[in-house]
Length: 234
Image (tube, rainbow, N blue to C red; front, side, top):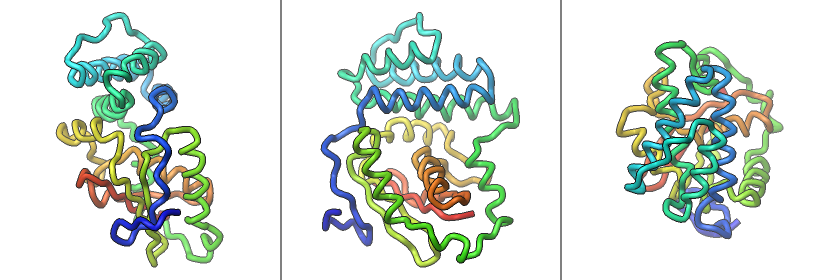
């Protein structure tokens, strides 16, 4: 750990890179899209590709290929333009929420994390049930793996709260391009009105592995330029 502090946050050492690896991060995003496709069907991928290409066109000012028909083809294209646009995976961030917003009204389906939030005020977990969860250990291990894979933001930190929740801070989130546009288009609203954060969802799923319990999150601060998520057990 470094001695750097942002407010009361304990900051990890800065990663030996500025931005996540385009191929690795884009590959993970496309794999996630394929999983979501299982819920919505082929129409999800078609719209996802359309929105991702539109996003890239806005960022590069260039026409995108018209022959991209599959998620695998989209992945290769996004990686190929990383020399022009260093964070091509932001296109997948935008395309994910854009497409889900379009299709949820038709199917009534929601993301797993959004469904978890519905039971927020119903499920109660006693402190004794989660006494073995070690946020320091979980985050340290996750940080080591994420940096080794070059998929995490170069800087991040955390703060443990007395109620057992954990605040996660990203001074400069590399996915912000996609989130900003999605926010402007009001695509990040969750069913209860809170703001969605894809990284926040990922942290909650990761914490579940270590604790054995479902987690949810609140996006406390967005693009200031840092982002802060508060993660807590349901």
